[in-house]
Amino acid sequence: ERKALTAYVDHKLVLADGRAITIAANLGALSEIDNARAAGAMGVGLFRTELMFMAHPMLPSEEEQYETYAALATAFAPEDVIVRTLDIGGDKPVTGIDFPDEENPFLGWRGIRMCLDRPAIFKPQLRALLRANREGNLKVMLPMVSTLDELRRTRTLIEACEAELEREGKAFRRFALGVMIETPAAVLIAPELAAESAFFSIGTNDLTQYIMAADRLNMSVAGLGNVSNPAVMRAIELTTKAGVEAGIMVGICGEAAADTVLIPRFLKMGISELSMSPASVLAAKKAVAEYAAKG
Ligand code: PEP
Ligand code: MG
Image 1 (spheres, rainbow, N blue to C red):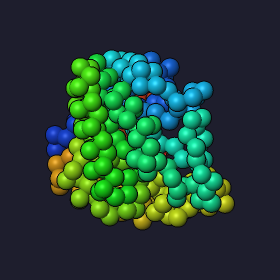
Image 2: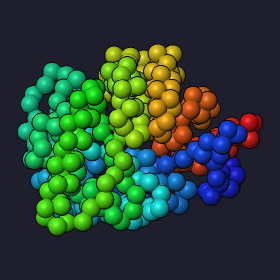
Image 3: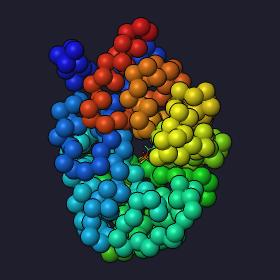
Image 4: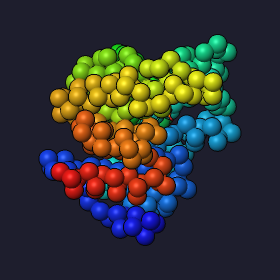
């Protein structure tokens, strides 16, 4: 079985309709790069920047972040590396950010909500990404988006960062800005978000939790946390349709992306990127190749 899978390391994945499929890796640290490359990952579909923040004794500086993003971009160039902006909340404490006590941290001050309220934390990350994009092909996506305004305010902040870098004489390159679809609100306004984003990446872990109203960490309701639930699949389908109609790339970066039973259904919907832990990459490539062969 192992031998059969390695045949897919360099396999190109193109469907009968000509759609190229990317199988990318989800990473949380630079130490995982070699593993992901060896497994045949076609770039990175989700780099979780919060791990760098959680591991740091204070807040990582713009310079420290630049080094990390530049190393990632370099390692995978010319392939894309999608970096997710800081996605933390009260359940994942970070030294240097004062989180309020919350009854429901999963419904609270997290992800893009916190970042937009704390430009002193958000701007160094955006500046580091703009600068590091000269070393390869970074794309940036925003977690926990639930309004169009959050996307627009982020874009305004990015433009302010660009103007600052310009004034300071620091070189940078613009990146494509996408949105994670992981709240029911984002699904319901997907056409509006698609009109103003470069791509969608569906976070099926959180999307399932919020669609099913079932805490992803609470084992008593784990039975509801299933992506193949019709309500969740319909949300994924609506999102994909809105993205495809707007002509933008739609990917999945939650655990479900590696589910070889669901992969044919996702491809049928119009998904063009699946991002997962490096250990799942080869099996997913095989599933896509088999789907493509069936036409
Ligand atoms: C998700 O929610 O599906 C996702 C990919 O992000 P995380 O698991 O880090 O919340
Ligand atoms: Mg998430």
